[in-house]
Image (cartoon, rainbow, N blue to C red):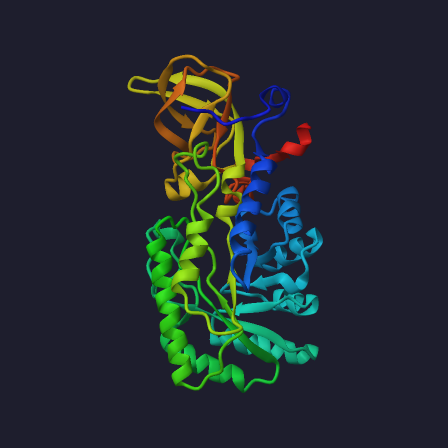
Length: 388
């Protein structure tokens, strides 16, 4: 297996576990996205902050000219502190608290992605109390399935997200009568880690149907169509495919989505931006030989990277210290849970105590989901610049 490139010598003196971000790869990924979207008029990029809110990573994304897609007041404040313009921040989420709505209104964010009639009513009420008009986009549940893990699908009728298609006209009519909201768009998102472009074609077809329906109802053309994100990364081959196929992704929308004149198309990419640039660096504590198998016990666990335990997710794992012949290991962490396992029956070069291990493709939903279960410290982080 071809290994990734790491400043191995400089890792030796660092306390593990920690996250390492290859910011050169991040910048190359951002440039690739910009290159493709610049081909299309009216395309807008909002980085999905929930995937990674590391301050150094956010700085690179902000400086590349991206807006932000936030799902909490904490994310909004983090982005404001990082320098993202408020007018380039959009705010989604099924359970926006009053203080979060007030924060968004005070900051002057671009718009709220509204997910229910009760939420719409609360936003209108709070905006009225503050003497403001809230720009809102309705998140419509398109009932479009995606070929991905059941826990990260969001566009089916059974999911908690969004407003049912059958209620679309109703909520728009309600908003049109309110004094303190301005209806500016429609928002859609069908899931995450999607690799089949046909899923996005299906979303385009559904949006086309809904826009045609709005025209028959004499509802004016909306200014903004937001298709969320969802593009996946190649977890199995991070070295061979470090940057997703953004051309195929954006061309899918250009070829299949029938935008109306003057409409703006918004994207909310997260995993595809940061996933491949991050690795979790851990150290082997012990090799334990059992009757049937042997275990490589490392000092990182599900507290640092929960995806394998939560989703049974695959991550390529590399021994940065060894070039010996490979042996089979269950690679496990120190947490007192049987699910604290990164991989089973996994081939690594012969591993021993003290070896540095890299768990790849951990730049999205890794550090941001870390916890302090078992009273563990949150992991530190470093970027390429820290070792220059």
